[in-house]
Image 1 (cartoon, rainbow, N blue to C red):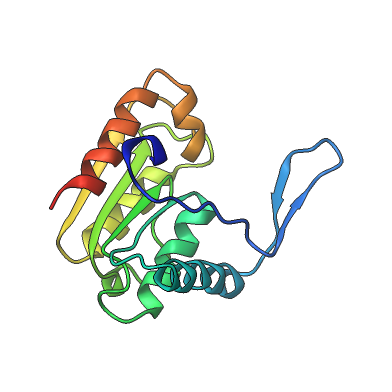
Image 2: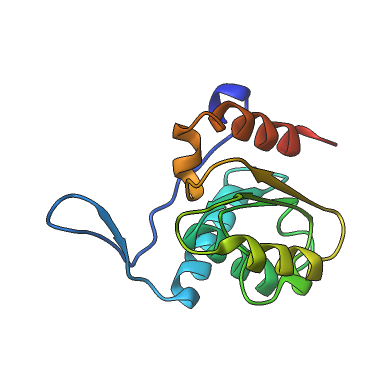
Length: 159
């Protein structure tokens, strides 16, 4: 995204840990993760960002959705939920919303839940269902990776 001209900030949730084998383990609460997203928004506003878009994968998408639902309208211009249903209150999400999931997401049967939250979310919104079984950010490593990146960049750049 940075290569496409977007100011980007990757955050690490305060509850993120690493297992002995180096694999990540997300142990933070939903409240803490949403607060971390809102702290990132505050930081970006502080350095002059006028429009904020958030991209979250899996638990990160849930955190983006919870932060969005708890914030004032206009806080998030766009939110991308990758392998995530966008949190517990999709009807409270503001801004433009993009839900992306693999049809056979291997991290459980996510498609029905994501579709249900997509239906409950207000317009404007879009749902993209990709082929395969990869979950969340792992989709970038599949044959669908180029399409995934194209969908996200197009969504972020649309007026």
